[in-house]
Image (cartoon, rainbow, N blue to C red):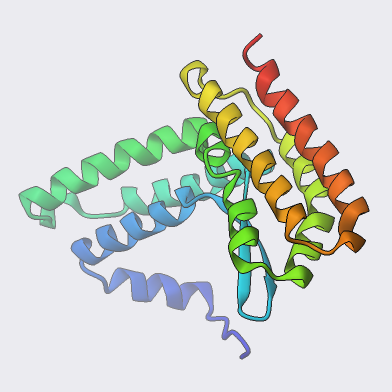
Length: 207
């Protein structure tokens, strides 16, 4: 469906017709869109789907800051005097959060991603779909290469958990190989090397 583009002056006029409460509600919704994470890589075959958690790209923080600047300008136009007391409090909380976002961008703790690293391996086991497993194995080397490029050290108290989750992924990969055709042997070897490199990266965070 073709998206209709409205002239900027019309959008501005429509926004001007909104109540301050509506403007606040839309600003809160926009804020949640900006900070919404994590990014996921989806692989699907038939009715079976895998979701691979992915660290945001480095430029994501810059994009979030740019979006936050626009939102900051929108918030400044909300007429606080027409708001109820509880809405005034919501506006102040939102304003502070957006100001922080303008300064720092979106900060995604790496442990949020690492804690789910074994999920797609477990999903592949449950689906037991050779075609999906093959596509997953083909994706693994590039997937972990990208993870390593976007890597930033987890919080110290989260490192051990990241290692445990990576080890769990390795165990699941072994089980997945046992239930898969032997014709996939080379793909499993390549995937194992990639996962071992990632485990080594997690372990290096302890040093």
